[in-house]
Length: 200
Image (cartoon, rainbow, N blue to C red; front, side, top):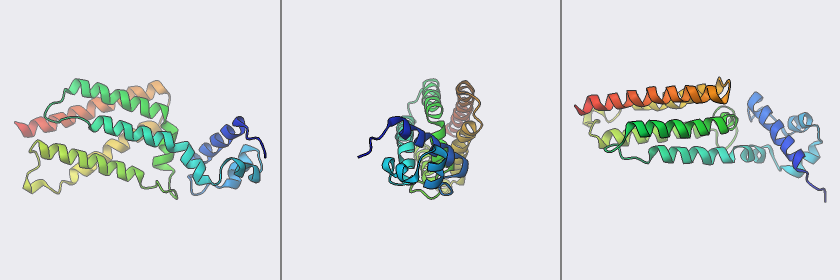
């Protein structure tokens, strides 16, 4: 049995990541990955059974991290929240997520067509939308005439796409962190101003 070498595996993963980011999951192939990694296709299969298994390996930790961040950001009582602390927490966890997993997040959101996770970005947007709806309903801001609030949908979309735009235009970790902090402060201050306006 062939001894599997860690450096070959890491080379395969890096090569596949680059190809997925460049071409998308669907357009990339095992033949392309093997050729660019400088190994035979049969040898590639000694490490991974399919390009799906490579994709899952590359993105597994990022999926877990995204879910952890969403859980931490949604775990608060809208009636009893310290905006300064919440802004600091949001900036911290989003900076960690989007610097540590920036390429993996782009694999998930921009390059996943053809995978079982291709609708994950929309699922995250739906989850954020549901959280906003719950929060505004609990604060009695949504009355019977505002149950179908499309604005909540585009607020959720703008939040996700705004963060992704920062990652897509990445220049450095410090650049990402600075822009995330500005974005979060702007977003939360606007959100809180909206709530205060309706609670007066």
